[in-house]
Image (cartoon, rainbow, N blue to C red; front, side):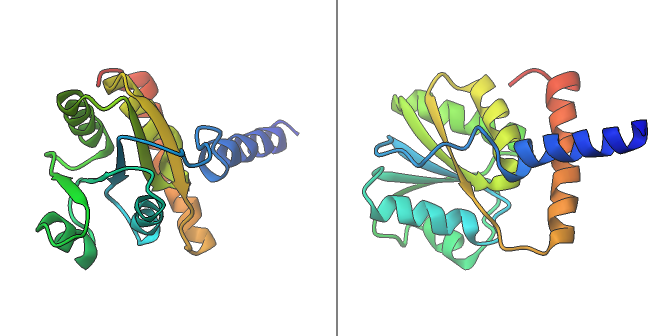
Length: 171
């Protein structure tokens, strides 16, 4: 009975944190910049471009290793809008958070829309929130991946969340 209870509670918490994250609000009406975190399978950048097209922000920032031809073009300044590409080393959510916070501070940005995959919203909000005083609006982009990839991503996020909460509480 206890095992069943642990499985049910773990599944419910996982659904709330990584499949239907409460940190993901509706997209803001306005922001100083839209930031896309690396690790995209296409859903993050597509959502960010929708926000740019709606006029939510004048600047698009990509943080991390360019992961598509579009991002490589973005980073080589072949776009119709202001773009900034950050390449923190090593490329992970923690270093991306620090790089985004430094850029926001340098540019005086007060509100930032952070676009990442649904499963990544909770941990990204925690890490970037530790580094930046800006008002962060998390925008969840739902990836179209197989169920087993969801399970793998949720397991990865649990590991990252434990590390962020218990092992490394710095920016």
